[in-house]
Length: 306
Image (cartoon, rainbow, N blue to C red):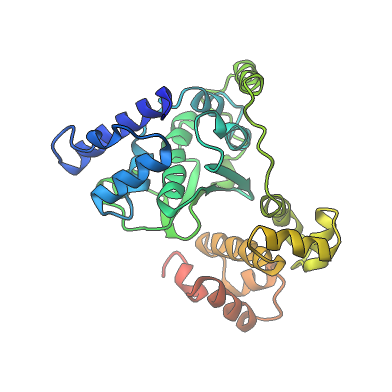
């Protein structure tokens, strides 16, 4: 069955979603009867609303504090950087193991089965980050479906909404700003409590390990398969085999990291030629061809004034 804290958090969010959508109170909440997991809840609501952005809407509306220990672990950290590292580690205190966050190069990406679940996790972070810092810590909210309703777009305010792998991008100037709700001693106690209960022990996949270290490696030029193998202390052959078991290839991992970095730079106002040079491409044309292959769109489409 759905745990008590999970059911309470989802019920509160569903009630608020009914208000925002102008629907009779209680209609959506009847969908919670008999649910056994987050997946089940989100699937039922998504089917009932027939709205591809319902996962993001629901995540946005879960009240701060409704998820108990994980909310307080995030809020009591010293700064956004420390907060997101801890939330990534201990999310399993309230979610199933297949719902996760991965934090790399200012991006917190959500991992789950299905786009609605991933969008739910991504949107969940924004109100909490704002409340903990006391100002806007995010630059971008990336969703699988971007046609969010007017009420949500208004509340997003200065945050840009883009389509792609669900997640949020932190503003670099806020990464190490003290949180208004910081309490390092309580934070350590909460993390220790989560550990004592057996949480925070999920081992990252090989892809996640590579994504976490590849961003820093980009400053030395565009990596190849041999570079990836060195980073995780494997032979290139073993690396290829392990990644194949996770459903991907070394080049796909590299392309995903390059695409994410390129999009962030372009949305931050960097010129296409500067992005191409930073990512190790010989010229702008080569970068543009690669970017179009990665995203299906030209680099100019991601510029702020596009």
